[in-house]
Amino acid sequence: MSGKASEERQLEIERLSQKLDHMEQELLEKYCDVGKFVLEKVEKENREIDQLVDQVIEVKKELARMKGEIRCPYCYQYNEPESIYCSKCGKKLGKKVEGCYD
Figure 1: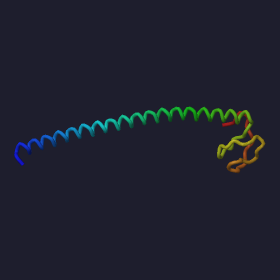
Figure 2: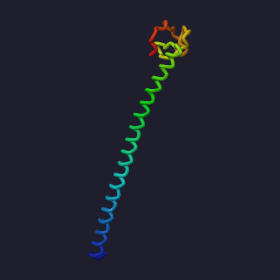
Figure 3: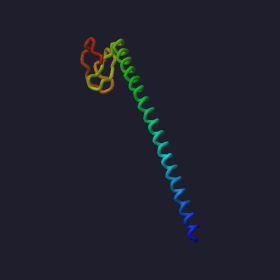
Figure 4: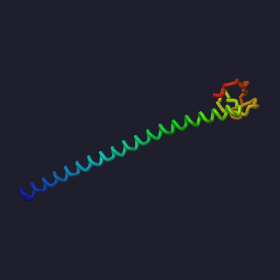
């Protein structure tokens, strides 16, 4: 191979290497952007889910209070007002204390 052809080949190799580096960097940036987007979306959804779970818990507590249910002090299962033993863990329930539902 002549010196000029070898030099042109080397320049083409460098050009393609730089192009490849640029494309790989661009690809990495796009992956990072997607990752950031997904992370932000997941964090937002988790906050909304946490708020909804808190609301569900409060409504369940209110419903249990309205029904006069007794909460087991061992497993926290709500039981019918006349229950003597917990329907979930089987432990003996204490007497219902007025205003003590959670």
